[in-house]
Length: 341
Ligand code: F6P
Image (cartoon, rainbow, N blue to C red; front, side):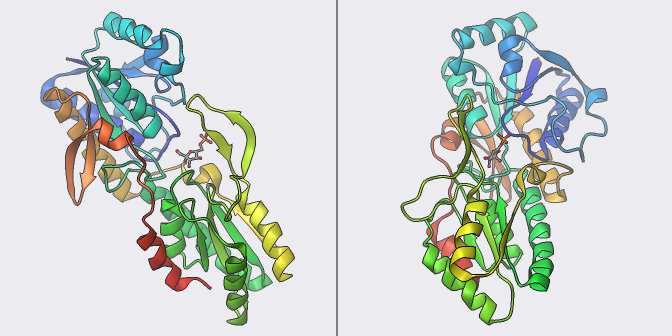
C-alpha cells in the first residue's frame, strides 16, 4: 500500500506529531510506503511531493509547523482540479490519502470522497471549531500561549492603571478566547458567538477600576458589537472565501478609551498562537490521531475522520465534522461571565 499524506490550511502545533505517528506505525506495523504531498491540496493538484519515511520523521515530534508545508489551495475552485488530482495520484500509485486539516481542507476531503477518492481525515485547528471531535490538536497549545500572555498583561496593566486588550484568533468560534480568558482571569471575554454591548463592556471596565485592579479584555478576532460588522485587515478573500480578520482589538481600545477616559492599549497575539512546540497534551492527542488514522487506512474506512470523544479516539464520517462548525454554547459563555467586571 502506498499512502499519501498532506497538511492543509493554517498550520498548527502537533502536525508533525501526526505525520510521525502515521508513518512510524504504517511502516513498522504494515510495511506501507509513504509519499509526502507538499503544501496542502496544492501537492496532489500539481504533483508536488517529497520523500516521506522513517528517516524523515525522526526528531519532529516536538517541532511546530509541518515538514510537508501547508497552503490554502482549494482544488475545487480550479478548473479540472479533481481530474488533475485523480491523474496525479494514479501516476504516483497512491492507494490512500491521509488529509490533516481543518474545516476547509477536510471540506475538500469530503468532496473528494464523494468522487470516490480513498481519503481519511485528521482534525486540526487551533480554533477547536471542528464538529464531532471534543478537541482538535493545536488548541491546547494556543490556549497555553494566550494564557501566558494574559498573565503578563495583568502586571503591566496594573502598574500603569491601563485597560489592556488581548486579541486572539477565532474567526467564527471563541474557544481560544473563552479558555485563555478563563485561565488568565480576564475581566471581559468577547467571542464571535455573542454580539457584545459596548455600554456593558464599559460598565465591567469601570467596576474593575473601582476594585483598584486594571481591566484585561480578551477579544476573539471575529467578535463584533451588537449591530456591528466584522473588523477586517483588507477586503481580499482566500480560496475558501475567507477575509483576513484582525483589528477588533484596536477598534475596541479607541471606543473604551473615549468612553472611560482611561488609556487603553491592544496586543494582537496573531500567529504566535500557532507557532512553536506543541504542549504535551497536543503531542499525545496528535500522536493518537495519527496512529488511529493509519488503522482507518488499513481498514479502508474512506470518508471517515478520527475524532476524540471523551478519552476515546473514534471514527466519524467526514461529513459530520465539516457539515457545521462547533461554536461555543451560550451556557459555556454564561459560566465565564461570573468573573466579568
Ligand atoms: O487556522 C484558523 C485561524 O487560526 C483563524 O482563527 C485565523 O483567522 C486564521 O487561521 C488566520 O490564518 P492565516 O493568517 O494563515 O490566513
